[in-house]
Length: 371
Ligand SMILES: Cc1cc2nc3c(=O)[nH]c(=O)nc-3n(C[C@H](O)[C@H](O)[C@H](O)COP(=O)(O)OP(=O)(O)OC[C@H]3O[C@@H](n4cnc5c(N)ncnc54)[C@H](O)[C@@H]3O)c2cc1C
Image (cartoon, rainbow, N blue to C red; front, side, top):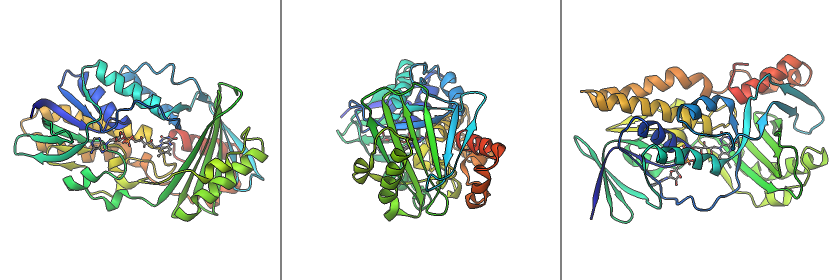
């Protein structure tokens, strides 16, 4: 039985874990980045990425040029039956359509290039928190020893619950499902993104996107688990009839998997700090309650955690320094993560009749700006 020693172990090599690993490895710290997946198969999963994430990618030295080929410079809004529409325009690119797996791989590769030890196909089955360090047990019985731990295990994280973090706060009430398709012909390389607002007469929304030879429809419904697939199919049909999408994805939508999002969950948690441990990304509920955006909050929370870890390793009072993570992320991220104070039902008529309101809604959606 071998035992490897590191300054920091990170469980989960998704966008949050990989961001923390890249940041810490660039500071010449010994980083183990562990994931049960091998990431060998590239699944097609489109996502929109806020332009706010670009400075973090730059800071990590991630060469993202190839990935950011589908910029979003305008959004089209529709009401639920597609009878009204408006457009929000941006002076600069406000976001990008990206492939989620390619995006994660890019950050992981940056962490590996900076010196992080990547351990794929390794499930962490046990965490033992000692007085001065911690020991992880992997499914192949290897042991990984480290001084500090970042838990970046994504939604439904059983490890987070076992370390003592509250799981009820991060099992939010928003349901999401997505269909992705490859088209026969190329569309424009420019991303074309439409957002359907006011689904089910409330805060439900859907986004449809096309770029290159790809099409995607993603739905988000609060409290409406049973209606997710039904509504996704209806939107797919409408979007095709209204020429928003070049094909009808309703049949595919019938087979879509749906997920419960931890949107806004971070705000309801008492703490994201346990003994030697910080909790980041979706595992910590770092998902915007306004638009179910997860990539940028995952990276942002991971960057703040990595900064805290770096300080903690230099501090005589390591655990006290770790505790500062709670106030640090709250001070910086709360406004970005919480639901807008305004009820979307009151805003809807204005978004379709008033250009500045459409522009403000666009900036709120992609850049988290205040309405
Ligand atoms: C259908 C869908 C569409 C989405 N669309 C968008 C979008 O358009 N824009 C956007 O911003 N966000 C989107 N998101 C959300 C975004 O993908 C997540 O917020 C983001 O991936 C969270 O990153 P993470 O690193 O925290 O978690 P994850 O990406 O979930 O990574 C967690 C990792 O931990 C690993 N792991 C878990 N347990 C263990 C263990 N015991 N041992 C070892 N490894 C373990 C998992 O294998 C996984 O690789 C979407 C999500 C879904 C499901």
